[in-house]
Length: 322
Image 1 (spheres, rainbow, N blue to C red):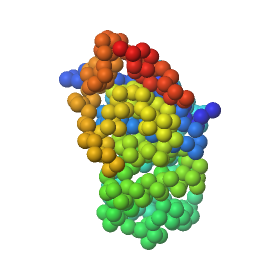
Image 2 (image 1 turned 90 degrees about the vertical axis):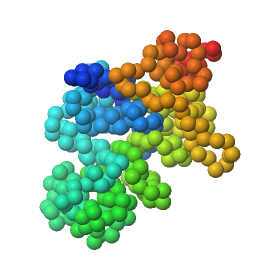
Image 3 (image 1 turned 90 degrees about the horizontal axis):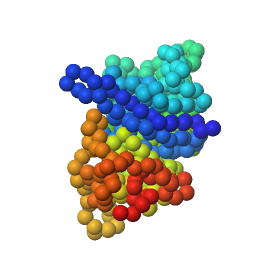
Image 4 (image 1 turned 30 degrees about the vertical axis):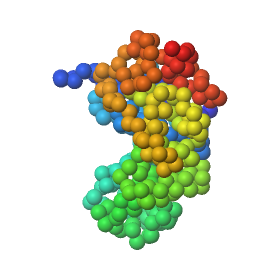
């Protein structure tokens, strides 16, 4: 059995004054094995981060899981969790690295104190022992022990993200959820953080769920990739196969929008924008922006079909030609 099993995950927001009901995540399914890296990719508004928050029980109110959603982590059904159960899962089973460490760290407590708090939240250890463990974690993520007493504002962006990684690893989780872990960092520091995550995964045997809009990060790093658009997985499969020969027009459009040094071809931006979750288009949700849409696309939602070994695509072109 996979470490993480997600089946028909849907997040719904009920109608409120001035706001219609919506389903920003609508039937997402994927799995993740121990030691594996799965990348969830797509533009802002595709539902990537909400998917991650749903796995942690941290949906912003009044958001809620649809009753048909099925999610298990280490064999635990998330629908059965109470308050203490969620506390054990967050950090104990799933460690989380968010995209902006400056916003995630408490500015009035030292970096070390926040790591110690994470350790003691999951283990009955004395403060002194927890501080020694925090120092070991700092060394593992490439920070000097004297940084334990530094406050977040005294650390660089890369150092703050290393502290966040130390907090995420404090309770020795099985799964690391990294939500845009490098988006607030410059290019050089981005590479350092990604290399650190690779080393930690290899050393600890972690499963990694990497949420990103940057396909360049996914290349050579993820084992599998799931491409999200308008709350649905539109293509999934082994990362090298999907990136080398994408079968969904949206995946091809994402790749065409990446600047490349090995070609003189101009960057081709995707026209339009991701639709609002209360107004998903009829039929295929990508058809208003798709350059190969045909008569059936706006009329009928495409089914998911196999497009290669271990690959699935939600597109009519995968099952019939116009």
